[in-house]
Every structure is written in structure tokens, then in C-alpha cells.
Amino acid sequence: MRVYNLLNYQVEVEKSIFLNAINAQKPIAITLEGEIIEGEQNTLPAQPYIFVGKPKSLVGSTLIKPTPLAKILGDDYEVKDNGNKISIYAGRAWQEVLKANEPFYLYHDGTSDGITEFSDKELDDLIWYSCEFSINYREVAEFLEENLEGILICVESEKPYHFNGCAYVDNIEEARKKAFEFIKDTLKKRIEDKKIELNNLEDEEEEALKFFGLI
Image (cartoon, rainbow, N blue to C red; front, side, top):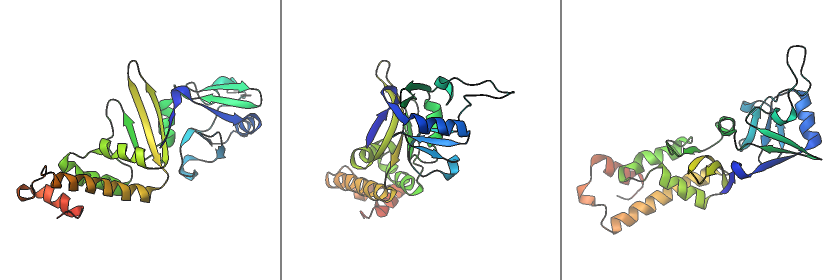
């Protein structure tokens, strides 16, 4: 997966396109590559976004004050005019980025709670079985990050260490297949190494091994 750490990444957007979208005062989405798509969140293509929503107004109205360009996407975003480009920094807007991507990401990962679920039911069901042998969300997610095409958007700092991220996979069918095979191969090796005793299984463990076709 490609990793975008928002603390050291800025999205570049064509200035004329950005200003046209702002002046239209309609809901938009901005991708990590700087593409602007018009539409509500429930109509957007499934891909990662840096911003989803209706921008504020540069000109204002009789009831609303105009908003400076720097805060046109919200108080936690930083927007800068760089000539023919607009730069968008979202390193302080993690909650907004997370909300923007909630319908699309496979999982959310944080320093405090870690990964608690996969949004895809088939993948989530795999963990229901694999957890009987302590193969958890973290282990499967790390495998997917190393072996699948996709994007991990995050804010990660070293001192003190802090991480929040959400992952998007390009091909969910491939993710399901590879995760299944990864868990199956891991369990198979444990059986071969005598770390799993087939003659001393709990009912749930037996059910899990049957699910992965190992008994």
C-alpha cells in the first residue's frame, strides 16, 4: 500500500478549478491527487478523499461573513495560494478526513484502540474464526498492507508516538482471497510445527479449522 502521512503531505489543486468549485457553493470532494469531484458523500466513487463537504464562502452574504481562503475548507485545514496552484494541508484535520473516508475505508487504526473491525463483512468473518488461534485484526491488516495495492492515509508522529490511520484497498475480492490464504497458511504451519494439537481442540477451534479447510 502507498502511505500518505498527512503531517508531511500537501494536496496540490489547480487554482482555477479550486476557485470555481468554491464559488459554485456546492458539495465537493477532493482526492489525495488534487482532483475535485462534485457531489454528496453518498454519490462519490469509492476512493480516498482529503475533504468531503460544502466549502465556506469567500464572498459571504448579508447573513454570513466572508471566509479567508486559508480557512475555506474549515478551521482545521490550511489552504494556501501558490500562484497557479492551491496547496491544502490536512495534518490537523484528522477527524474531518476520517469522517470523509468512513464509507470507503476497510479499517480504521489508532494508537489507543487499534483495529476493531473490518468494514467488509466477509473479511470481518475471517477474524471471527482466526481469533480462536490469536490471529487478530492487526496481524491480517499488516499482511494486507504489505501485499495489496491500496492506500493508507494517516497522521503519524514519533515523539511522543501517535498514529491514526485508515486503509483503502483497490480490490476487495483480492483482499478476501489473500487474507483467507494467509490465515490458512499460518494455521497449517502451526499444525505442522505441533503448535496446534488436532486431538485436543475446543469446539470453536475445530469449527475454525474446518472453515479454513484444514480438517
